[in-house]
Length: 151
Image (cartoon, rainbow, N blue to C red):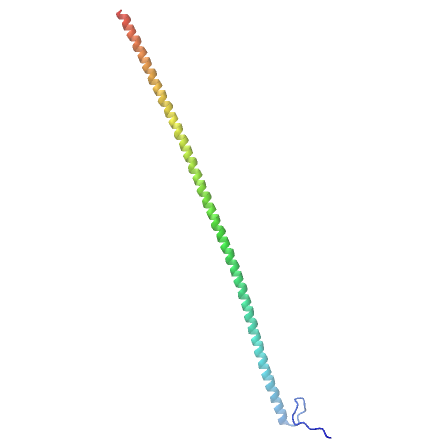
């Protein structure tokens, strides 16, 4: 029983003719070209996907940072607004206290002037009374002297 001879050629089989060698070389070249093209396409696709994923991750990170920055900015603005309101309230309160103190000083000054005027008027009235009394006394003395002189 003889071994059957194979009509198909294995890539590892030794070629017997130049045309077979040429066919084999072309088949190898086609295989490598097709494999290389597929591999390059896969690598390109992987790199594009990796780039897109990295880009998306960076965008998310940037968005989170922007959000944090905006939140911080809003808090700072809110605190500044509150600080400004407190300063304005303190300023208004201080001005009110200053006006009240000035009004109080003015009232005290007015009261003191009124008291001094009242004392001056009383003194003047007493002086006038005293002058009238002295005048009446002098007149009475004069009338008494005249009466005595006529008697």
